[in-house]
Length: 312
Length: 254
Image (cartoon, rainbow over all chains, first blue to last red; front, side, top):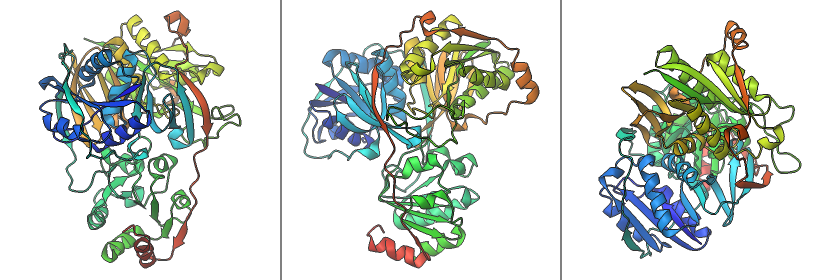
């Protein structure tokens, strides 16, 4: 029994979700190796080799890995799998992991297991269905289990204390002509990343406009918080989709979640209800968000948020 | 080049229905519950119909795998502007055992048979939330994939696709034939008008079985248990901002 974790990174540093995936992988038992595929990614490989609990770091450093295209990563993973015969292949349930892992699974003729929240046994996993309204335990009958891991459900592995050996893997023939990375337009922000922040402040339709989100940014800067949004606020065009918290957006579980002008649709609750403390500010006392809030404040957010900013 | 587009549309429990776990704890209650087309698949159909309106597509074929009622889902797609439908019959009692891998095999086989050059499906179904069918269909066909698409543009033999990724947006180019999965912001699906609903009744739906396509539905996964999520106790209402700030400071959260 052995597991391969696919590392996610930007060729400079490792993404936090990979550390959660490594913890999930260690719960499976057996040796855990990590594949770092990228272009000029030596520093990432060095970083990963120090992560606690890994026995081997496999490195595929090639220009062709630019943009981390699934059409290119898949044959590389399959070749690595062919060589080492892992029983489990694991990645974080990020945009990259979600895009890549089912492609790998189909090539191995196995059913992928998406977004697990718990490992019960090496072949038995827990995941949510129906936007978190039901929880399913399932058993995989496949010889190789291909899994993505919900980051917020597993602690991050320690980035110190490990001393894994590094081994280069060959990048064979890849289908370079069928897909091409053109570019990225990433939201620039000095605030913490949504899924990793200790405090998250989210705005909903009650914010009334994109400009009004400035109020939340100001409070966020005082609390060192990330800013998110409900699907309703995204649908209304107030903010971009990468801020969406919910079953179809990002799943967060910070220590403190402040929902501002959010009614609390099921699909939003699915994305934040594992937060340790939930605060809701809404002028409608009947809003479902109050049913999950530890502290509810029935108030006009346009008065309450500036006042809170002043007083924290 | 004018494309034939194959679109997958899944019949799911309507998004507004409150989910109830079945007493046998092996699934959720589906009998007598309102169903509709998976919202992400509506976006997929809409995009395909728009490609046809722009003369980029020559034909839009809507596919649904499911029991007899899946035909209603296909009719909705036809009323939105799809040209014809394919219903792959899965008996109701086998529906719960249908995995995304099976559906991908069906879609891949149909894409070959129909000589489709583009397959579009929703990025995930709101029942099992797997987010896998597009990726696996692409893998089985050895086609490139453009997942979580929020914008599609066709250039010469290629699609330029803007994708929703964790930190923002990403642009890729994929060579046709390709598989696309639609994200929320790709478009806003139209409502079917009454005349179009009437017209859709005359459109053809072909019926077939997975075995006709040589697809084996053997289970790879076994459901052990389905339970309700843990309920979160409602907390307290606070009077004003001062009390809220004090409570948060006392609990060490700020």
